[in-house]
Length: 217
Image 1: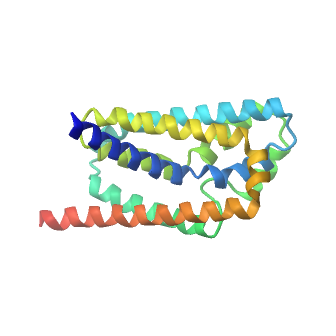
Image 2: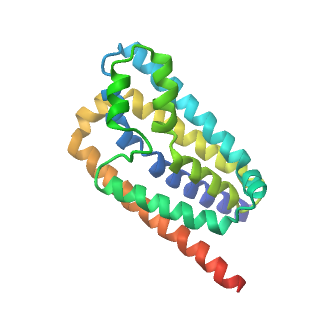
């Protein structure tokens, strides 16, 4: 039993730290504030809640279907590890530069939805997808689902997804106060630290994938 708890706790920490750095709530929050600045506080909370709910559903679906997708398309875990590592490394570099990738949102999209008055439309897209749940987050849960230590560890990953997205929601709803207390410089510093962590995780994913391939030769 102690070994089981230790293994699952280590996997939970790995899943949480990977997902939290990939979804990058501290980097997304300033964009969320700008895109919803013309909405009332009540509508902004509604957008945050619906956006995070949309993102959570997407991540849960890909968590459960990750291994099925691998088998369906004949994709090896090692290939996905290397690809995911490259994607994470690229995202980490942009986080070090305090930028958000164009796969998450573009300047034209931000301007378009700032002028929109439809809170429900904004909550689903682009807030829910791809701002909150982008390609990196989807890749992350699929990769982690394929690397679960045991079958029941999928439940641990699902818990990590729920914890991550719950924290994301509370960061969004307190975004104004958070940005005032921490300041733009503080948020950029934290984002760069998270970017560095993501790059380390990315390198480890690539190493694990390449090592497994060479061990089979």
